[in-house]
Image (cartoon, rainbow, N blue to C red; front, side, top):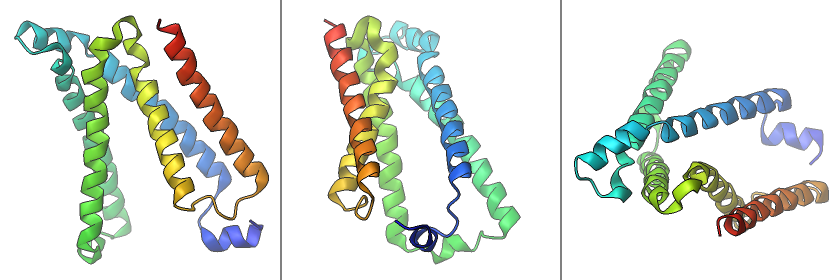
Length: 180
């Protein structure tokens, strides 16, 4: 796209700001993984209470996701107060609330599945978060391609997208072969 078309499509686009927030999100994502992997004592307590191994990680998921929700809700409410945008919630189409609830539900389910599958991963349980994140990226990229989100991008952009997907798939293959 030309610079003018980019500005028309997304008037607030700022590459440097985007890279900054991508890096911050990456660091915070790693923090979430530390939280999910650091709850071993909670998992052991659940197992000692008689919980089946595949469900022992659920208290950890609950604690980590509620912590993330508290931070995110505080940030959103602070921004609403600062910008005077509380009234926007009344103007939102109800379908948008349903879509948001569905996305939130899927977000929670992926971590429930991650923690439920970890006992079967043995010594490789620490890579479960990377598998979930890479699967999310691959799935959303394929969906974006199918829905035409990448239409209008250049050959170089599509080549980089393909390279990134190939690297993630190679990582899946390497982890699978390394776990044998």
